[in-house]
Image (tube, rainbow, N blue to C red; front, side, top):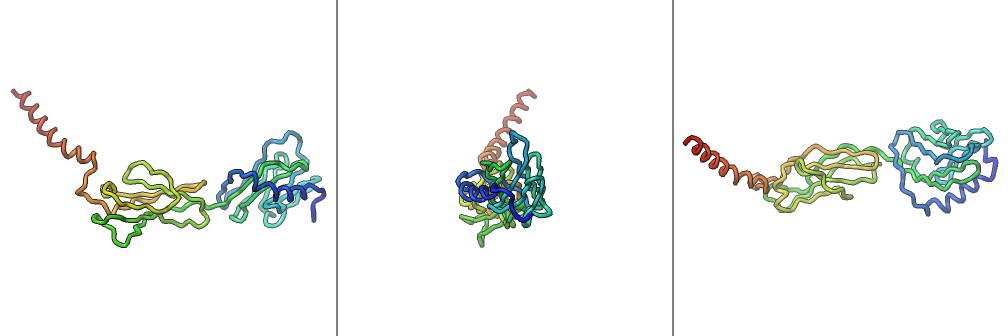
Length: 239
């Protein structure tokens, strides 16, 4: 089948170009190499024809019980004729873009903005400051990893075994106050819409064991008092 047998795809191509960007729908993220599946809402009548487009170019066409696949989608694309569900196997990043579907010669309003990305790799915490130690006033750290093809990314940090700090766009962290010198280890987490990975903890080069946190200071102060009180209570009991 060399072309389209009706005027329907012309409508698809023109309207997709005019309206898809205006709808502004959230992207759908798929992992590179895993099936890309797009399922239209249930149709009210029996489906007799389906046309899918990708960036206004034909992907698959099922008209008059004849199925035709186009371009790089040949050999790796499936169409469920009863639901109009489209499955693209082994998708690559260039399979991302805008998908539209025409069912029974009617262009559906849904725009599928697809992004195909890779899973994040395990990051590591890197010290970016040339000299960083307990006497340093400021040190820079980065959450380092292979980010090619993994965007959009966010980063978050954890100090010792505390809670993860709020996500941020920047991969960098700056330590520049006394509290950070009480932190023994630093971890970071890299995250995208399909995956997340966290680093192994890095010993904090700014850690100063001579500094105490409030909890540690309270423990140091209270311990002798508890010992004295315990000894006194023991003497009272003996008498």
